[in-house]
Each structure stands twice: as structure tokens, then as C-alpha cells.
Image (cartoon, rainbow, N blue to C red; front, side, top):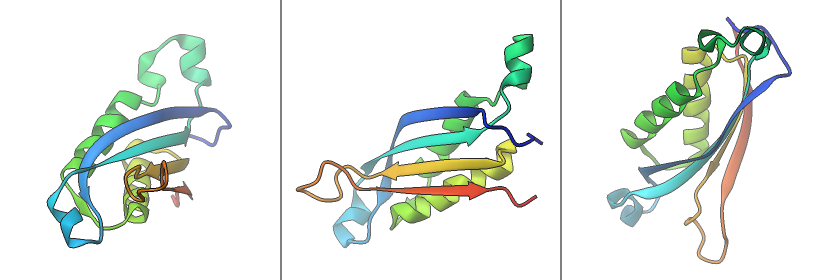
Length: 123
């Protein structure tokens, strides 16, 4: 288990295509979601030892998220954010994280629509 730390690991601009939306036409197409994650992780042990096994494996985190979202169907970006947060906390022993899920094509006259959530592990 990763103890609380003010250190962070970031994944920014993770782009995933998935089926998402509340309208019938949205349920038949793939749309782009963009995720930004900020995860609490004590980077000091890895930084001092230069040992990759002490790092949060951000490649594996991004693969896990991408596979999960691509293989699922959602109506709401709020649901995507909640499910991703729960999964990362459980699978990677992250104590705190912030997840931003953007759906850039949600509103024609807007560059982007997004939700941001922060969650803490309940061990």
C-alpha cells in the first residue's frame, strides 16, 4: 500500500474512443474522451534508488484505463470518472486521485465539456 504523499504522478491527455452518450445516435458511434489523472504516490523511494519497481507504473495505469473504457459503454462522463477512479484506487493502491474526463464533441458551440472528481481510498 502506498502511504500518503504530496508527490504526484500525472497522466495528461489520455485519448480513448468509446461508445458514450444518452441519445440514440450516440449509442451507435465511437466518440473521443480525453482523460487527465493526478495520483498521489510517494516518489521518493524510486527517486532515491532509481528502481523502477518502486514507481507507480503509469504505462500499466494508462493501458488499464484504455482497455476498460474501450470495452465498455457509458451514458455519462460522470460515470466514466467514477469507474476509472474506483478501478485505479483498487488495482494500483493509489490513496488519492483526481480524474478529469473531457468529451470535446459534447456541445457544438463549446471547445470542451468535462467533469473533475477527486477520490480517496477507503482502506
